[in-house]
Image (cartoon, rainbow, N blue to C red; front, side, top):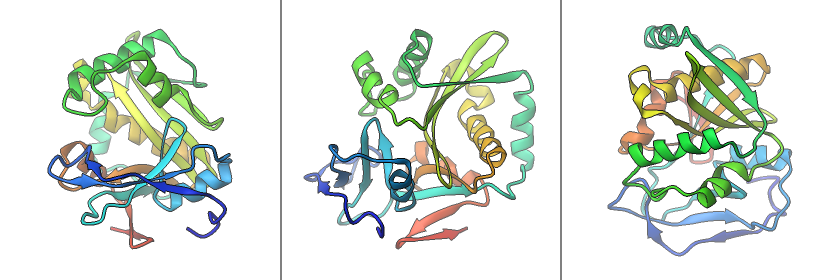
Length: 234
């Protein structure tokens, strides 16, 4: 983690893994009192860290390496046939880019999403306090992307702008629109947005092969995985 030597890190005691129920996890956190500017945030992201609210973390599990940081090199990304079919389903979808702030319609959508899609996760049950700390407490580089279809808000993507790209923090959507894959469409939109900004990478967080909710990320090719501190294209 060259360039991050001035930061202080803390490791948690072993705890239940939020992705693989049979596993135990250990998490490395940046000292929450540290002032993280965009350059440092970019370096942390390159090193495999993620942001959740005001916390920056990465797994450092002793007997498991399942959580692998993933990013899409966007410059020459071209839509696959399945990508094109998905884009066609969203021909009536339009977006609004907003600054991060609490909006009741966002929270209702988030609450519906967690209640229906993540009842088995550690984010259930949702609460306004949890939403505030996870979604609203953000760096200055954060944007909320609203996706609308036929006058209805169908999804919201939370993204951070980095020096070398975009970090996809979280997307929540109306489960009634599962048939048009709002989450995957949000990634395609973010790829195009990254290209528009002339930045090279869209950071997707952790790819976990044996976790259904996290394994979809390698559906987007090409993709790069951080393995043994080196980004490798697959």
